[in-house]
Image 1 (cartoon, rainbow, N blue to C red):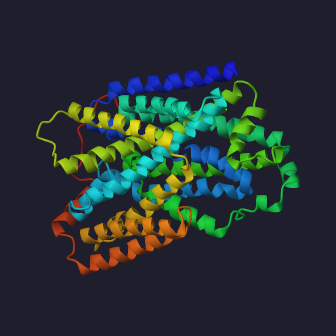
Image 2: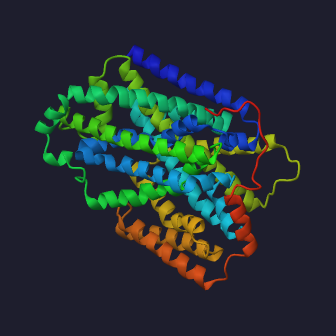
Image 3: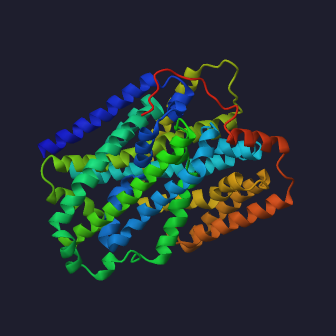
Length: 487
């Protein structure tokens, strides 16, 4: 394993070096939080694909393939569909707003009264997303170094917190681009063909497995519908995803770069399912489906390649973890803490001071994420709670604000409150992992949004005019900065 260890150590050292490089670039709030809004299409595509394809998409995607066959691709496939929908229909308008958070968008659209409550819901979602990503380090480092769960979480989490705190979005962008390349080589170009060959090829896989393993709908229609509802719609409104849209240098970059990333996700989904199906042929009686990825890597890959593929899994976890962490810190600082304190940026206030404040919040949230990850046991339940709250509480007011002129601030606040409360109450009644909470919570949010909006005074014409101006990209230019990275 010495060669494999060397590959991993070089990779981790490279991540920290990228953090140090990013620190030298992140000299303003825009640079620190959204990479100066100047990423070109290739870098934008790679980093967007990196953040949405995390440990759940890699290790979990292979596990679903092991359990269900090719239809196990649906979870990651619906993530790709969501990213495609966001990129084609909404990303250009979102990028033109030139804001930093989803709550700022709600304030612009509804007149400044929707920010704090929506910020709390979004903060809870991004916090749990960062926690569940951090817990995944335990699986990978256990394979690598045979360390216990707590040490693994601290080791992986500390590295992510370090480079994220140092350089903000610049560090995360560069590391994500590296992680995208590592994942592409490790999973698509190495693990996928090796797994298929080791399993005897597709003909042997079909001969040894039940026919339902090759049924595209074998996982079940209700499961597919739930994945669409949670993951496809979740991609449309998550702060972690929007914050990447804000990094695009132009409308076309956001639209076409995101389309490329979404298409890549569809390919990655199918690859994970095929790898899992091959693992089922080779190891038909594994104690857990989630062990399929680690088992096939440990037992079937040659020295060096094994290290690179494990680095790919580590890259998948780190990209999602760092993206969720900066999103969580941005929401906590800009949407909650600053508003509760009533702090408004003063004329001439130093940009460097804002960088320090956001850097402090990343460090604070990072420590909290590591502590919660150590204490938390059920990752699936935590992630389900996060996505249920996000979709049930925020989907309707966000998409309603973008698509329906008659929506009002009162309707948006009622939708967030009723949708969020309904989801929580229904999870208590039906169970956290049940499908009903997000179904009925979303319907309740939609009904309340429409009824309250129609029953209350329309949004002020001046607010809507300012909103349309921002959507058109007028009056939102930010000072140019030298030496752009626009690849």
